[in-house]
Image (cartoon, rainbow, N blue to C red; front, side, top):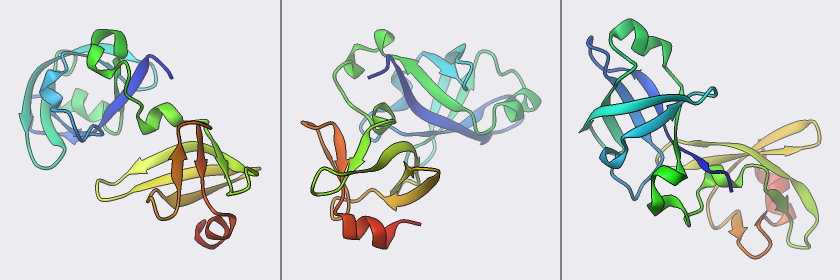
Length: 166
């Protein structure tokens, strides 16, 4: 498990004064607890100044390094991360982003691939599983695929894997 946890994504500017709309990936956590964040693949350090809830898991957030709409636009589609050392409530929790690289096995423990990414659409999560040179997308629902904490692997019956992969 990495010390860096992805907690959301900037989806677009929100207004003309530099606020951004962020979708939170944490269902059980109010985004207003976060003060220190990291933005994008370069993990740019930033501080959250204000948080206003919008709807569902969306927030309007002002960030100290984003002063206007033009700067906000540059951060569109950038992921938001935290350092777990800054937030002790996240030390023992495992999130989907922690499982990138986990093997995907069939019911007989044969390796089918590994988790390389996921998309969280709110109502559903799609897992992206790489098998050889091909990446497949499979919905993450208990009736199809489960995560086994003992083996630290995703388990999917081989027939369902072959039927559902897109």
